[in-house]
Length: 155
Image 1: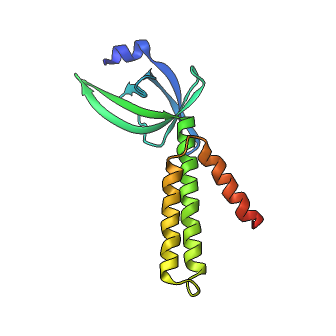
Image 2: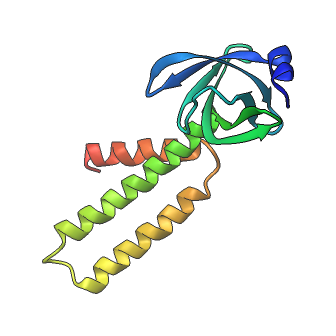
């Protein structure tokens, strides 16, 4: 892909880093492959966000690859949609919460619970984490809310 092709077919994206708008970048988006090609002189990092105003979508940058095309440098950004990012975050939050629960059980029961029972609790938490990873998208977020509510309510 040449710079002239990029200039001719690109669309604007607003670039955000750490929650702050840092500029705009023009690139060619392939929704089928979930990549955006931009000129190589633009700095975009994994974890940055692009606002696609054309599609009214937020795109989370998951990979950045630099390549040379003739005498030009091209940067290819791989992205996931904002919804995909949120689904992964919800699952990660539940898994982290389960880790915290296991650590709390381990700590609180340090003197009262026999080691084999503690290991049993840890094994159960690992099994729950595996189940959470296999849940349909969106369910993990609801599960996180349920677990948090039960612990806050004490039931």
